[in-house]
Image (cartoon, rainbow, N blue to C red; front, side, top):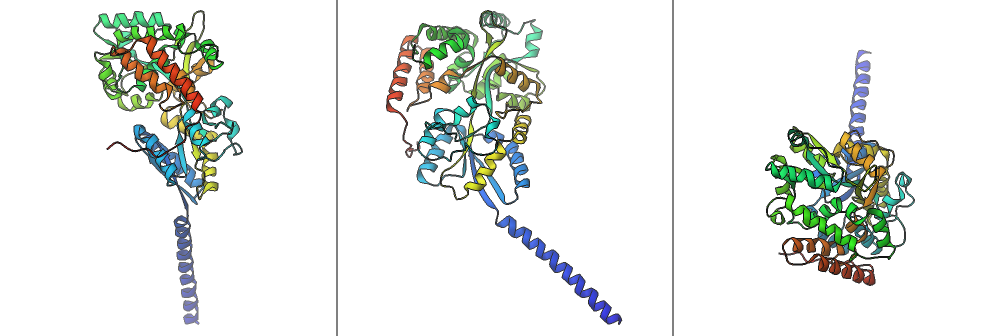
Amino acid sequence: MKKSLLLGMFVIICSGILAACGNGDSSDSSNENAVELEMYSWRTEDRSAYEEIIAAFEEENPDIKIKFNPFDSTEYNTILTNALVSGTGPDIVQLRPYSGAQTIADNGYLVALDDIEGIDNFDESYLEAAQGSDGNTYGIPLSLNVGVIFYNQNIFEEYGLDVPETWEDFVSVSEELLANDIIPVAQGGRDAYLLSMLHGVIAPTAYGGNEFVDELTEGNTDLTDERMLASLDRMEEIAAFLPDDFVALDDNDAQALFYAEEAAMYINGDYRLETFENNIPDIPIGVITGFKEENAEEPLAMDWVDSSYGVVEGTDHEEEALKFMEFMASQEFGQTFSDSLSRVSAVDGVTATNEIVQQVTEASEANSTPYLMLVHYGEGSPTSKTIFEDGLQGMYLGEITKEDLLEQTQENAERAAEEGVEELEMIEEDE
């Protein structure tokens, strides 16, 4: 009797152990069979935040794994183009906005996303940054960027400076800073895009904001207009407030001047906020979201959709990739993105918890104008934006006049419009 009882218990225990082992094998098998999606990005600095965001998605979708693969920003376009053309590309790609996304879409490398759940969580103007010539949407907008002037609150308080609201106020404050041996603006110019960014922040109230932009896009004027020339007069004027030999400085050099409190202001996109919060947490930072136009109540903020994420046409795992797109279109993702990276999410209904991000968001919503050269002059090879910013370098070095700069940019814009969509080809990398 006792032997039978012991034998029965032994069988039950063994059965339980085997069942447990079987469940473990099943779980391991599920993980081994999970679909892995490779995701390209140019934001190496955001790796830790993306890994947390991806972990949240994978917890809800254990049969899908995301391999986040970021590259250096300056190398990304070449890497992505070559991967797509060679057919060795990833499943999910980060897309440059406007013409960058359109070129890839028009070449047939992306899956249309118009019917995915959550696509209506975006303003139509944001979706335009990720559309093809056919009007279909090929990317999930990630964030809205705003060009801002960061300023050191300690320096402003020490010298009793009011935060400038107009260009004239800015000039006055900068002159006061110079008189006290403080560099007014930490600015690099070795990377030409920094100069078009500088122009994008300080120029809109010089050329007339959206009224001028509308005339440009409707074909009623062009870039040689006197109002655009006036914006370059402002670019010449600000040179007196920048570091010595600023054209030879890169962005890291400029940030170092701001960190060391040798410079009172720094101009770039609001996305630099996270960098400053991490690197100089003890320095109180404020932002100027743009200058006020005459008789305006709100500053004119220059903004643009930063990037989007799309699904590569021909991926073996389109269904799973589209599921991740739906996740990126959700308020859950938008809120986590904003909170983790101190950024303005493109998803409707997200309220930033960071006070400065909220200030930037409200400024953009109240009165904004597009980043002119990026949004409307990003087409062609080279792009008109590239011609413009390279010309700004030449202008500062005395190699080209303002008038010639604008003429060359306009000629390139006309050429790009005639040539139409650029065909993607393999890019030879410099050795």
